[in-house]
Length: 289
Image (cartoon, rainbow, N blue to C red; front, side, top):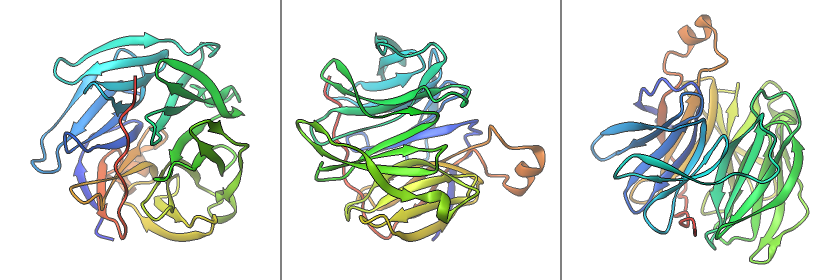
């Protein structure tokens, strides 16, 4: 693959990459530096806004704002003004937890996960935000949650337990989510790497970043490993499909666990990357508020 560096973001924990179909730009976050980035692939222009707390994700909403998951709850972000406004805390979340990753389903519901900020305690779980109501939904008792990711038809949702090196899948419908079951044991395939943010393509295959793995991996709908893409950074976090035809893969990376020797080996770590994907993704629904 023709992998290329788009932006040297110096991200400590680049995450949450997402294509904004309406604006034709990429959004991504640097969780530890409290930054919400945007990047325009047509011009190369880019900038970041300072979030008031650690920010795990930002999703375009139906009113042209962005719905964001910060350490202490959900916020609305206005791109025109750069202002973050808190909407709600997450009921029952421990103070030591933060929000980490998210997606929408075809009905505009937002699925997201929480996790222990120190990555030590199994206090993380998944939620769904549906027009102002937050409900626990999906696995719980997880140290590092990633995803969820929903397929184009909206009948499958994928949850990642990063520490356990497992991706789970559950049936999904407008009425709710089914019991999660094992989809892929990535530890058996990549014993020294950890599955990070997942995304689903238009063929129903699941892509995941591999933290400590220098790769993006693609899994078939039955959970079999289909393909791996080598990346010029060690800690690969998340991928999103974008561009005019949704065949450009945008990829975030991290540096927070890297030593100087690691940075010498991977000098582009912390960047936003891209490659031309062999398949297309699909447009993500806007969050319904």
